[in-house]
Image (tube, rainbow, N blue to C red):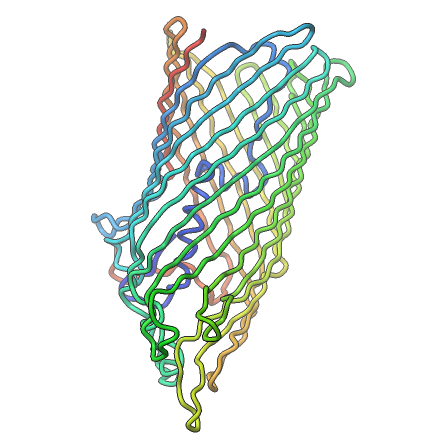
Length: 487
């Protein structure tokens, strides 16, 4: 999420929408789960037979503080993104005839804030958002067969005003005349931005005994997410019908399906083997709300399709648990970007609208990931502790090709470049529990350390070092304080 520094202002404004997409993701899910979910190697919510039989009535209250990202220029704060979350959960096991039931429900609230105004960038602003999350799980078993259902609904919203301090310039005077000089007139600063998200997830699982004490477990889930980005800005070009306060809406839709089949053998060293499939499609389009007959109704659309297959196992020896996994994925997509009518120029005494377009594709997308997790439990007198370290390695390969369709004789060059990214994600967590009869107090600290490198020589760059600017970055930390009351 590196925004170009002052020495290179205006050259990479188009990267700033990624800032909002990441904020939407963060409002919908725990930040650490994003990387492991993308690799299809995250832990899914499942209540097995042993957990159902030992479940107790309890009320849980959790508070999370998430230091997502901070950037410093020398010793001065430049960018900060943080989130606070509070969740209340109730677990109610009960027996009816020959069946054991467990009903769980949780309600969560979150607040997120982001600010890059101290950073010396072309585009800056502060963001404040809030979220609501509600989920419910029901599981039942007759001691032999087990089934469960889950549902989740979450929504969030946020507001910000973007300030564009500097617009791009070129050494090509013709490009300035027929394109870049019109940007400050078309997109007047500040740009008021409203972001809203809605996520719905439904799922279920079924478990049955097979040979010995081993069990076969099947899980299905579907997730639908709808995001909407609204931009309001002031247009002051040389065409009256284009001028005034304008609105641009960009809806983003995500549809995801997941299937998992597991072989589980409780009480043995090799506890489970799981095969998991995930398919997802991400689409967006735009609504420009144009004045009648004066502008384009759409400023582009696009889609990304993703398919992943993962294999994982876990192995338990006394108080030590090891989990390993490997996954492969393929993805592809296309996109089109259209400028609004930027204004009018005159050619041979004829008024001509100024507008440009670009289109491209993501081809041959491949991802290969490996995951290793270690977890252990131990005690310090009356204090119980759990430590885990989770390592994920992912390598992404793709090609981006595209072409700008520039008008008024402007020249454009087609691109066809490889992108290769190597990502190493280290996630450590320490949880401490102290029991006071029916009351348990829990504290945990979790730290995410991402090490991400580019391995290709493509001229497409997402970040750029600025000479003379000493940059420090930190984040990826979660502090949790929880209280469990058993009744």
